[in-house]
Length: 254
Image (cartoon, rainbow, N blue to C red; front, side, top):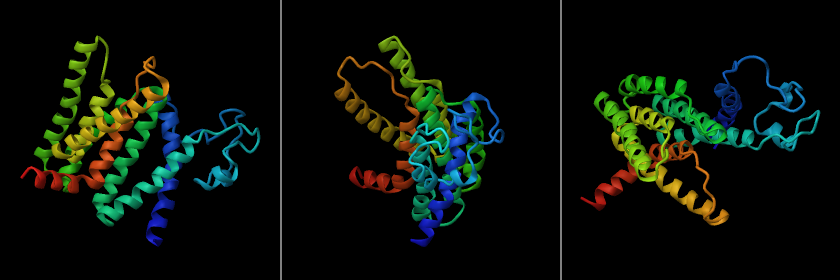
């Protein structure tokens, strides 16, 4: 429990930095300067008002000076960033595998919230990520080089094929290029079996949420949903429970 609490606290600190990346990265702003400030009044956020999770709760989600509401997204990101290392160490133990997957999960948190905000997944994240995955995954024992290369091809290729079929069937874009590159990056890190599992989970959760949204708003709701967050959810499912799911699947079908 002490280790889990410590990992959660350290992860939440990283979550504060992830919030900076989510806001500034797609806008091409420096992630170092200027210091964080209230977007409404411009008041610089003091260190005692920038303690992850605690400060948000103490301030009740408002700026200390102008009392403008602060998006609950900041709190959500910090909580997620705290949970990630605790769950990964519980799953894999303290080691390089948990560290690499933790960093990968943080990248997924960043691209997911950028996708939710702006409907884009930056190439400056995914394209270098594919190269890093092809090199790092075999060196760190996450998969073989062949498995990494095949995972990138399967992950990106599967969504590219869906994009072609969807555009032919519906006459409009059904899968963004950012989603394709993100799936290829995850395939490079996790291998072809894991990327197939994560895509299945992504479509499952995407369909579930889509059905809930349509039920709530009616059939006239025609807005697109960003798929990046569902890919991230699928990746986390594959990372934490992937071995157990694949073993169950293998046992079920011999």
